[in-house]
Length: 440
Image 1 (spheres, rainbow, N blue to C red):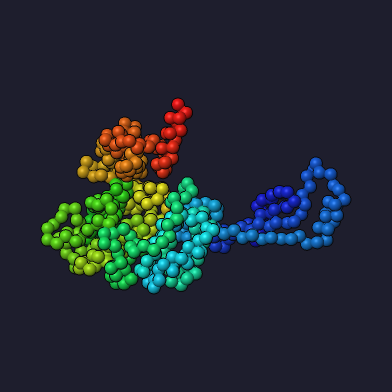
Image 2: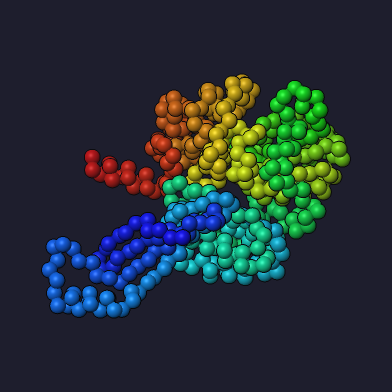
């Protein structure tokens, strides 16, 4: 069944757009182009135009059908090929010659507008990149044509303002994630050494079972579990699962949960736990940090390891912010994403007053400790510091975008940014200041 949805008369071509009533969630649009001259009311017919009109009366029009599909990946729909998206995926598999694999990927990407970080080594690939949806998803489709990548979990989210990364870095890297000592020695290719992956719905049931809301369920809940946030402390500060302890690390490479030998360390939630009976529920942004670190814990004797498949991003897309508080920190120019980014119809859970207790760093200004109005970090205006921190509007104004009073007197200060802007290269501000001085 077809119907005309619009008629566009442009130049010498009449364009008719038909809509096919869909029987699938994907919508199909077809553009019908007829090679028929368009004569406006002010045009005086000539012999040539009359001959052309007579010819069209006896000659079937040339019809060009162009199919436009809404591409759905990770349940996200993109209406415009020019819309920028961010794509994330990782996959563990053996590459005999990872550098040759890199060259093959680079060859495919020639002519594509893709920027981001794509690392390959002997144990797999880890990718986060942005680009127009047409280019970004073309790379995904090219990968999935290879049987080795046919089952990868690809996550797509809107890029908001063009590219989310400054340039493309597609190269061989000995370690797929930043970790002290690297990950080349870890058994990442052995699924039995990694944590058991839980689908978002299974993860939600686990959380509801161990951390129930009503009193009746609390009586039957299990306390023999640890909810482990395998991220950095500053990521937890703007969003986390309810009941998760704030990580006492500022860089994943220094994570050391469960590695203490004899003494019980207060900051280590895995210290002095029963490795055979305690369920360890691990989560991170996209899943790879949990998979990598779970092999270390498995070698340390922890038996009941579970991880959130696809990480927080996959969970928010499927379950919404159930058992989740705040936003999701991401390592690109967007920095902070609300749950509605992944599930537009979902409403973020209201943050309770107890979330802002004096001993909690959640949503607190790093300078004065007051509650921030926006769950989004900023970099210190002192480029030689560049500290990433949460800051209230008053402290941003008083310290001119710096993280402390000392930084306000630094020689290389950048201007205070407003809104969701990110700092550019230093030479841009330096040259701008030089030009201002010359003009004065």
